[in-house]
Amino acid sequence: MKIRRAVLLSILLLAIPALSACDLLGMGNSKEQERDYYEQQIEAYKKIQEASQKQNEEYNQRLQKGLQDYTKAFAEWQYQQQQLQLQQLGISTANQTSASTDNSD
Image (cartoon, rainbow, N blue to C red; front, side, top):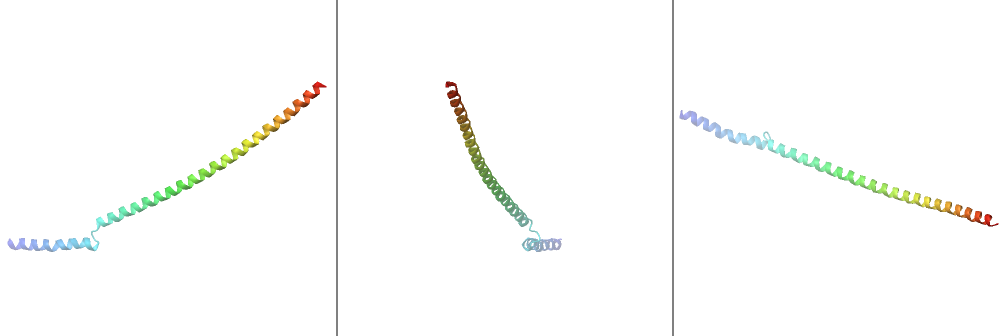
């Protein structure tokens, strides 16, 4: 009985370093694999954030340029409308003055 216990104890004592060596050799490195996986996920998330930020910046630049172009085009149109109204007023004023001079004759 004592021999059995001694044999079991010696087997356990020999098995503990062998099992811990598996972790050192990479055979049982599940924690390291998990850490690598999480690091990869963090890297992927950072890349996604950078790409999203770049897209947002590009969108904002295009939007700002579009608004500037629209504002410029609207100002030109508004100026043309004012010129057209002035021409129409000039023509109608000229017609009124000629009509009033014709009536006075």
